[in-house]
Length: 388
Image (cartoon, rainbow, N blue to C red; front, side, top):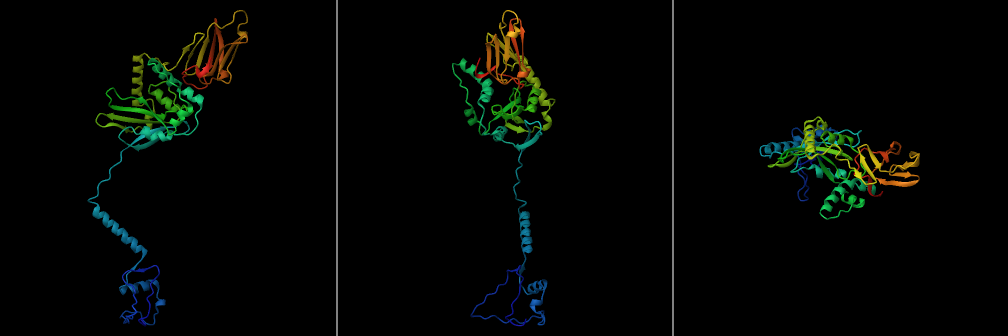
């Protein structure tokens, strides 16, 4: 080098880690004697390219570290650590999962297979509750209609014990179900031993009260399992559980292919439900309510109703022309004879289709045939609270 004051140029993106310059005012810098392989005086440092500079500095003990050098060193260190700890690392516990199926109410949406982690009980009831959450306002008439069946059974039990049951308001039901409530409906049950397998349908417990659309695929599955007359509103999930006295209850797989009524579990369930119905003396129309109010009686199928108004045909000639029947907007029925109302049913439990309704005379009785707007069982002829 030309003098001890000459500076060493290091590229800005390099970092020297082994040498640093420290100027002490009491100890002036030492003169550097030219080395055998020093750069000839004729070659100025500014004229050296970057590679030559780096080579020159490294040959003289200057440690230079590039970003890629640090990455490589860090990777090598991590790999060495992994190798060292491989023999002592604890094995990662395998998470056990199960599959279940999602059956949307909208027939245009496909059925899906979902998975969840196995727990210490049937986890689907709590897991699915948030999917049914809603802050929508409930219609008072819908709540009254859809709670009528359960309320009627509760009142029968309460009256037997001298109690009294009050119908819940739409606001109260909405408040209690705001966070989502799951009903686990058994499509097939555990054997009498309490051990074995069962299949459940998980639905919104207040889906009907929320006015959710009917789920035809879910209803068909229930029918295939031997359960007739079920009205399922909203989306549904199908899952299987296994229970043993030693391990308790756990979820297990239920696949898309098992949604067929010809699947093994559905055939077994259908046979068991049929056997129980025969033993208990239930008919296929057991779910269809009927009534006799003295002046009139009514029966129903899933499709229509028949109301027989006894001894209502007027005496004399032109009896049929003297009778008039109207159906409002499908929410009521009014029968008049000679302009006088002899029967008024309002509001009906659910709507009928006025254009498809008819009436006829059978001896002294007026017989009304009312076509339901929706194929379903009616719990009552009138919406609870309606006047005859």
